Length: 212
Length: 283
Length: 124
Image (cartoon, rainbow over all chains, first blue to last red; front, side, top):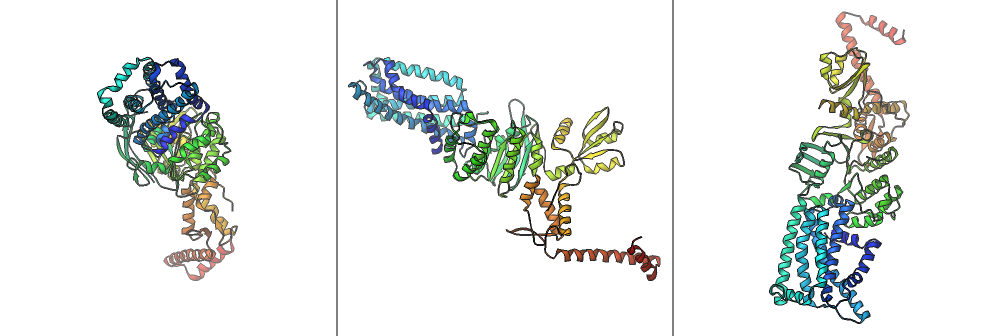
């Protein structure tokens, strides 16, 4: 499984287009949001969309290059392949967190502003939403043809980017919801993980029964 | 080394693999022939567990192919007919991706083959010709000490020169008698030069699985004048082609040759293509 | 050693190989004790199946023309000329027994038999 994660990692870091994307994504979002103080939850949006996009890219690369069948012929089971993908998406989340923090940290220093909210509860809240989102999105990618997967993705991006314009108080309230914030959010995380794991079993089942 | 027992699979569209069986022992090359759509690729996918079988047993290296899937695939070198690589990657990058999957990867061997095939590892895969991609596939498949090489139509779409080169490479591989090679093709002339065994599939059924020797001793092509055949003689043939100037037919049992007695006929060894052509006519 | 396979001939390929190697050995084109190509490298050189070459070698070995030493290879059998002689003598002896039996059964006398042999031997 480690080899599978390494493979996905290489997929998204090789090539100049990938690197350009990684470098320019945060500035791009900042521009989109207009450096607005309303973009308090910019952090959440960066992390979520970045992690989502990277994970999704691994699917689209495998599809467009028709490599799925080759990967399946390597010493891995279909279960390994799916689980590798799920683990990869978690790994990417944490990398996103790191990526966003560093990047925003630099920008805050340069522009001498401090307009992004970045504390533990935000990270945990983002994590919970991410687990739920991926728990739904991943089986969809395995089940439906990529065109429909694309459509779903666009829907996700639009929703997430819109969060840039959400009323700050709304988001605050969401995070303060009992389930998410009690005990430092641990209940929410547990629920998120359960959903995520259940989703992985579902995806394994779907993938195993795919006929090509 | 490769044992298939009563393997079956039914597809929704009506095509099915019908309880097929055959074996390959180590040290030999088996060619898997059949017309397009006969089920060659399907069977290979079933062996590699890329498709789920309905019933039957598949054992590789004496291990069940599902229970020991990872271990088996670690010892199999697999070559497809189309390129299933990341087009934007260089061959070197592709290799680096594949390498960690195999426990017995041998980089020296890989470089040796890349050299032999005259492939520059820093070329992007999308820039390669079909033949070069095939050679690259082979280089990958041969660089992790694989004991069984499985290939799906490795020579289709390649010009005859390339095909000969690939065959030469296979010859060299099989000098090691611990290795076995199984490859499907509809280009039977390639097989005649190299195969030890031939398994012929048509419409999801195995027509025969025999050694090349047995095949060449079992079948004969008879050619004779147009008026030579009567009902009795016609029945002897598996398939006949009759024209105004003569007939040509495939005889399955060499014993029947004597029934032609002193007639003025040509008796020839059939090619695999002849066998495929005439047996198809029967069905 | 020269081996040429004819694809057009209806002689099985293993027979062609067997015949040609045997001839080479008898003619002395290959020395006693000389190493022969392995069945696999011969198969590769001739572009045929290793089963075929193995069969030819098995036949030759059965008749004592060659021998295989585990782990070392296949060699032209030493002393096989003697073996050949012995075999041929045995064949002649068996044929002579038949001749004697036939002569006895028809009452042909020893002198007449020798006369016949004389004529045939000197070749008419």
